[in-house]
Length: 320
Image (cartoon, rainbow, N blue to C red; front, side):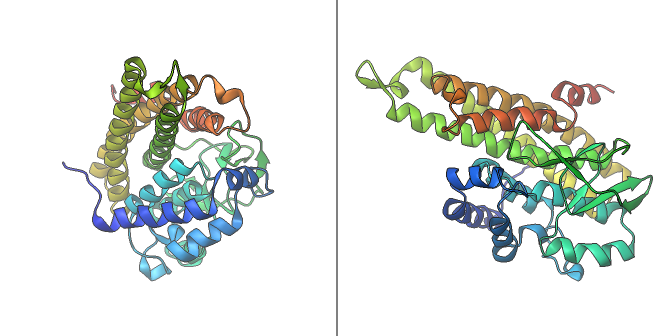
């Protein structure tokens, strides 16, 4: 099957990128990290009102755009490239849970709120992405978690996490949806690391020449590009499968989703880890410097690779 973005999806990515360029530079990202909510609430409002990012996968009957999780993944990739802390991943998982497990009353009550920007989150275990509405699967049903989410610290300050005491771990298709959508963030973050490294290699002069002219460094950056592009392909396949499953949650589509999500989870996690490491090394180890954004790429890589099942666990599921 051939995966490629449509013109509309490319336009969506361009609109989001333009908004982030204006409203979420490095200083804004750092300010958002230190805010009480963990993200820039005015930026989130702009993304929801001007672009409708929270409403993309919400059906039109619930005040949404009636698109799919593929369009959500397009936005997540741009957010990953910018390293912007936003709750889109959390609310996309909450939306998927409502569409797959929610009853008519829950959808009618909660999906319009989600489409307007209120953050729903899927309770996948004791440690969850922070949200305003916590949704906990109970077999084939969905419950609104009554317990307040308790914010906890995170290595990646752009990722807001909370704890729900005693929450059982979630497995199966909804977790695979989480793997697929997370891979879009990983692809964007890897692209940011590559872009930063290439730009630096053109500026940094050693022995009278830009270091980007040295063949050994060209090869390393070419390897980074291969990892980014292969990650993007696996992510697109996984998010297409996730969108198809959420639209029609059949067993056959769940099987396809499980395989593609495991591939994306495995490959994108390892690829981002490697790209982040190369970003640090090719910047001369500058990741220890708080003022430079290389450490944000490194932290994002480590946090996302441990957010759900690690890469080796995802690979193991392909053998069963």
